[in-house]
Length: 320
Image 1 (tube, one colour):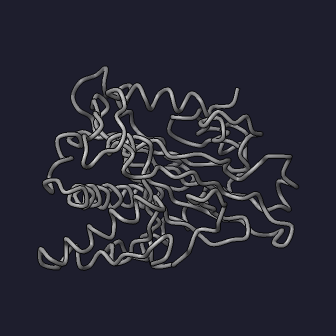
Image 2: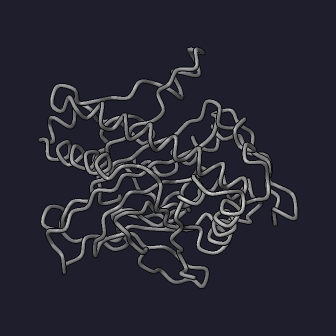
């Protein structure tokens, strides 16, 4: 089996109990070893993925003074300018700022509690004047990612030998984040500084991450169990899935929250620019996660309040 296997979800969606169990077993194995997998048969249309990437490119092509109207800080909603984020800080490694800019959105479904909604479910920010279709296109993509992530969490439950609905109480009003990352070409940003990346080495923070990426010489790399950085496999039909720190803690380190990075632009491809669509699924803002006991878990962590944990992580990667 490949270090990062490709798993067809059609057997999960439409198979019998035995088919679903086989898919779940493969997911468990992948997350114990690589912490990453590819999924095909996810039933998210190519047209929607293409439309989301297309409107994103239109946004990033806007003049900087126009994008500045939508500027935000790490953890906010809108345009994250170049130099705002350094993901390497999340693991305590001082690095130069990441060589990217992002458009960020998040869950904006109100709970009815004004204080909670203001902190966790504020309205997203959209460039309606310049790109009126962006709100609808990205909004539809977010709905599809939310639904797929719920399905992945059900699959994770079965992979752990739990009831299929085990995680549902923790996902009744979940937070999630969505970054559209634009990695500009070398011709635009110039050579990387020492230790600088498009995204510095880090692990993700939440439960599952669903990534729609483009291949490139300055693309995604994964840190293997034997301490090597390797290029992530790519399949245009697939999403790249990995788990974050919260899920690793939840499973008592049965599953790996794997370090990864995005290489700086390569001198061998000076005009290469890439757009990644990154959906970070999380949990209810007030969820308290406790490590699963053996035989599932292998290490016990103190109970983790998801909202507080996320705020600490976001503060760590903010520049300035």
